Image (cartoon, rainbow, N blue to C red; front, top):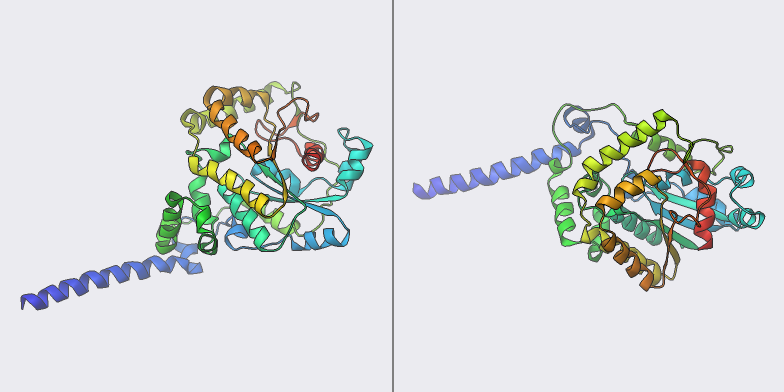
Length: 356
């Protein structure tokens, strides 16, 4: 009798376990996600990466037909301007390029892979995906900044759970730290670690809407007219300064006050350098230009010795690091906000990347 009770208890526990697993997997069903998870029908801005998609193949093929060279740029929201620029008309009309630079820049197609809040991990993943896809770019540019390497990056968990496909960490397990690999494997075994139960939030954020627009347009040539926007440094109105102050205070509160460099995220930067060298692809790492007020806030919280040490490691591999905050590097001084240069600056940024 006692043996029967013991067997029943074991079967009961096993049965409950399999019921939990089965219930967990229900959230992969579309209408279940729509009705019963907080994610609802919200789009995943990392869809291209997690689905291993290449919506820009048409751009690549057209560039090859036109005998253009291809620069693959990997980065965060600070690289989003490359989805709109540079066009031929922007190259012709920008005041920041010489005649010879205009001619040289038109010989290139800049292929962007940029995601808001992107860490170095997603840049590494997308780099591997494009190379495995057979892109063979003439040059690679990697945007780096301390924010992409923060242990306390407020977007990194979302990126880790929603941007890295299982095929990637099965094919390149050596790329990912054990700390991050554990979370990736766990999130694929237990779906509810990714899709939280609750009332769905089906309204689309500005990022969702922007990436839907990018998905529509990034398979075509850039055709935007010359862009005139942004605010020139030193010419901000009082209201602009108030907005900038608010943004910098918020990023100080949420990120800078607790800033710690992640050794894993720094390792991914060096891994990107090694991947480019192994594949014999010319590469440049570049640091985006910040509004001076943001640079001041960063200087108070970010350990400069660790940052410089990483840059030195990259350079020790024979790879250039270009800092656009160097006054001799960039003439364009227009910003959309303290973090982002205006799109009008991107012809000059593109030119700097192909020249270095």
